[in-house]
Image (cartoon, rainbow, N blue to C red; front, top):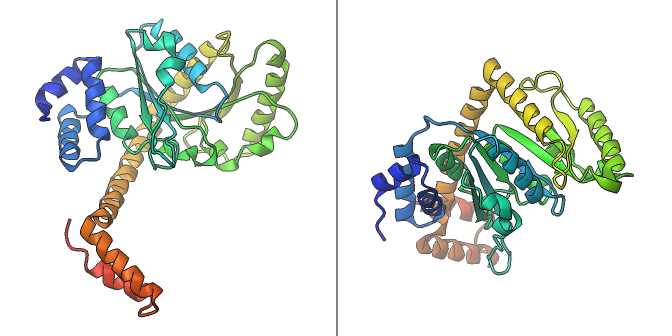
Amino acid sequence: MTVDIEQLAERVAAGDRRALARAITLVESARADHRAEAARLIARLGTARQALRIGLSGTPGVGKSSFIETFGMMLTGRGLRVAVLAVDPSSARSGGSILGDKTRMERLSRDPLAFIRPSPSQTHLGGVARRTREAIALCEAAGFDLVLVETVGVGQSETLVAEMVDMFVLLLAPAGGDELQGVKRGIMEMADLILVNKADGALKETATRTRADYAGALRLLRKRAEDPEGFPRAMCVSAAEGSGMEETWAAMQSLASWRRESGHFATRRAGQARHWFEEEVREGLLARLRTPEARARLAAAGARVVAGETGAAEAAADFLATLGPA
């Protein structure tokens, strides 16, 4: 099916949610012709509009979807347009994903100022889908004020989302004992805010203690140049009661404003652009290995190595020499 890129770009720029959904489907496609059309679409829309990009991670069951719905409803109640890009894990066996985030955010999905798009992670590591960054750009072009990226939520590999957002939020559940040892240093070093969810009812006191534990742990981390005084910060929230949402939004705005004024905001985005340029180059090189001809040559070279006819390094050098231009 032929896509009218000019018309699609106009509809996306006008805030047409159906056009935005179609545009994201286009950029997520792996077909070569769709990739070319997606590149034209992104170039046509440009980068004039900028939304605040926020990545949200946390282990399954911590309440990411509940937090996003409560937080998103508060923001839309203020007249802000909120886009949610939720990445679901793909089955290693079937390749399928449930993509059930719209059912878990029932109220927010019906809000005219909100847009929720679930996407499969496929085989991409890092808690995000490979084309999530392009989907963020499309949401910005559509005029959304805030783009929330909800990651798969599987643990240490979640740090990749920090390469495509302006701030990274780690959502945790109340717990005592050795809970602090369950959080790896890497993901804590990436976090700008740590939110202890479910700070209500019988768990409120536990959540307060947990927040204090994480606040203490954050003080032990090396100070980052892009952080003002008081950041990174640990806070308590309750998605069920809605408590802590105003304070969380105020902290996000404070951090974003400081980074813009100090120049760290633009520097961070420029660094991210370079990172994804290099990722595209790497992916393009790997794509040459996926053609039928390359696979056949690779299998033949592997068979020679297995048979002991040649060494692995020599066979690899010979194979790479056969790779012509894309």
